[in-house]
Length: 176
Image 1: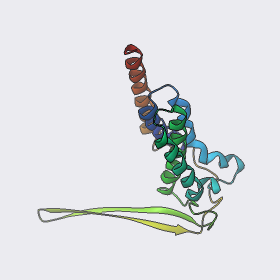
Image 2: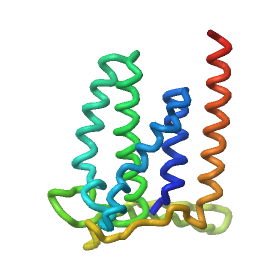
Image 3: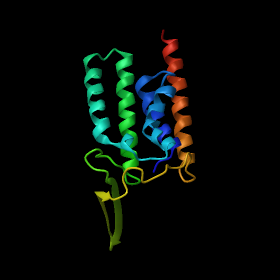
Image 4: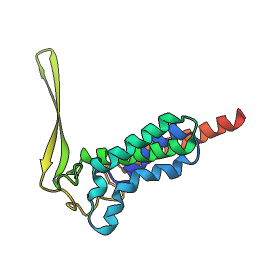
């Protein structure tokens, strides 16, 4: 599963682009909220259910489209979107109880990309399958804070996001 640094890095990049303010650094923390259950030693609990997060995201999208100028509504939409994005990222790595409370079963995406060369032709095929697993709620005690395989890329994304933010804020303060 993505580590906390990766979840934060992706959330920060999205909020910097959307908010264009230093508030992005704080709002990006909402991308970590589904993992709050790890502190209770029941990681992958109902906090990872799309059935719970999707309606909130849809309501916030509705509110966001009703008044484009409201920063609070934009933050609400970003917060709920980042929460849902966290769940979708976890879904690509390990069993996640996305349909709780209908079922405790976990689901994950099985992604297979293969290719080959026959003569002078190259072929590539990809498949994505939603796989069920008996390991649902509480199946994982939590992932690493920082993954040894992804920490460098995540850190680069954080630094690029902060650099972009600095440039954006500087440009906007000059134009005032």
